[in-house]
Length: 326
Image 1 (tube, helix red, strand yellow):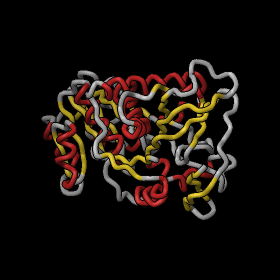
Image 2 (image 1 turned 45 degrees about the vertical axis):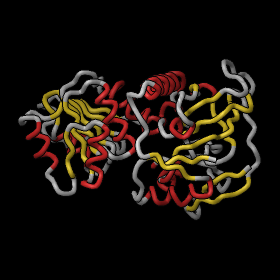
Image 3 (image 1 turned 90 degrees about the horizontal axis):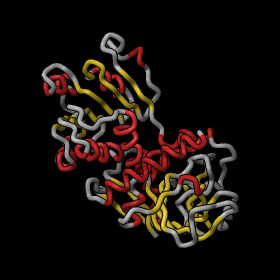
Image 4 (image 1 turned 120 degrees about the vertical axis):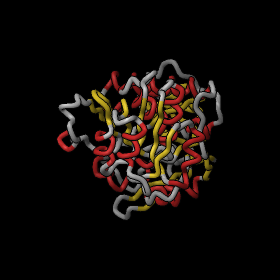
């Protein structure tokens, strides 16, 4: 089969021929119809040392929409020909930038009733946004939310989820070039982080009280920014870096709460983690099928273009959602 492999010693992606993998116990072999491109795939150079045995054979690609064409021993509840969607395990070598991929049957969900490309665009970004806003922040009906990075993959879904949950004021940061795009997704206020004082603007928009919740989908020092604009007993989710509450002004006196979230950690923690992954995927798919959430700015690329597209993503030169299709 054709597959895109990653060579850690050269930090490069190479299109090559690989044998079709064989499913082991509890695994399924999936014919890949589409596979999303995500920052975690692009930034494999930053985490590859954590993956045991990574070498030139390693096929990345986490978000796969496809058809089951092989069943490993002990797989129950799935049949050949089933259309499925999953968020893959970054520490497994048979990812989705290929014609066939392997995945554990325990964290499959049925493909939602959208195109394979739209489905594959959702797990990493969409399920993360869902878990952050619904599971951690319990955002339904809250008065306000700040999203740092409203035009990115997670942020663009988070804006829509917050709107669907009935949040009163959805404030998002982005560049001026993406302001109309983020407003169209449902943001009530957009702040140009390059030209405006974000903290001052948020406090003005909330009459000096701050927001009830914040989501950092950018990293850097945006965790400090998000914490600084939280209201009394406000809550924040950090997606990119490790939390550092000692750096957040008045964190104790304001009674602030902080959460870390890593979607892929669900693969590392047994049944509890698997249940969380599946639940997020099913809930997100239900809202996607209902039209409450859409995949914005979807761009399709073919397998031969994925390596170059990942390098561009690493340099933050992409907008919207990229998906590989055959």
